[in-house]
Image (tube, rainbow, N blue to C red):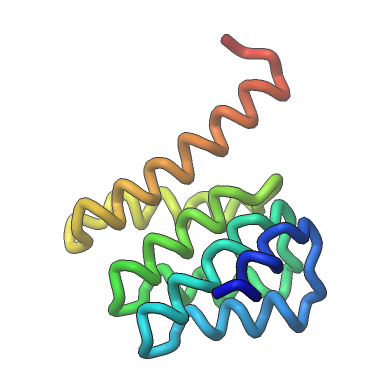
Length: 122
């Protein structure tokens, strides 16, 4: 737990560390999954090779894993259009529960706010 908090203070972790944290999102123990969210959410720019694992996590059986993946993707400074379309599709998936869809909506809202600030749109 303390190690994950220490990692969360680092804005740019090595690719191997990020990949290991993303893999830990699949751990059977809730405490492990919860601990790895802090350092992952602190990363504003994830290596491109780690994005497919997060996209895959959007389809995980665990609502928690899906929601965390959406939040992490939403916290990225930039995302390819295909990933944004995947998030929009996840938002529209009526087979998913409200908590996951709410996390996706917040991720998309955060992205829209960043975009508006860049363009200085009220």
